[in-house]
Image: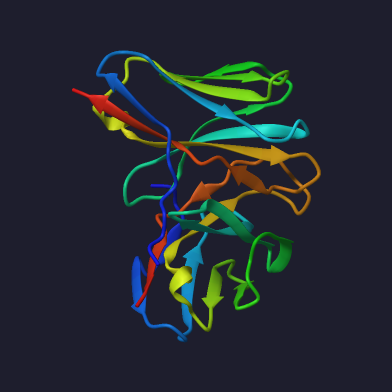
Length: 116
Length: 113
């Protein structure tokens, strides 16, 4: 058990809808990362938050957004959903200060999103 | 249309044999590397890491080797067990990109009892 909790485990919805995925990081971790894992693109970094602030952006679509709350949990919002958004969405967390690098990230078990 | 899955390299080994999983990383500026194990239905699990000032690091039943000259990383698993069956990813952290990691496509390891 990594200590990172993601809910829900599964989500089924239709095209055009909006969903929110939730992540609670490991106790004491200040950084949260979101990844998308699809069959045709592997594990892709979406976005990072550190202590409530956006820290880095990867391949995140404009239809997607995230935030990190004062209690350090994070939410990933996906809107105007398309069939191609069907994937596993993982959250990871790491310890450390804003500029610390080279820290292992610990992953939750993901949310499987299916768009019908 | 139908989505096409990634063509994952596969490795099959007999239980008790040693396994070697290889990874070619992309950037000579990468200075920190992690091997992850992902079992079906679960998230990637940290196995072992290595920094670029080292060429070898050992853990419990696992060893990571780093060859910066050819940008190659390997994971050796000793006395492979059925529970080692999973997809293994290497991840690289490029210097000056913060704590962002770039993941390889993975290798699927199957242990034959």
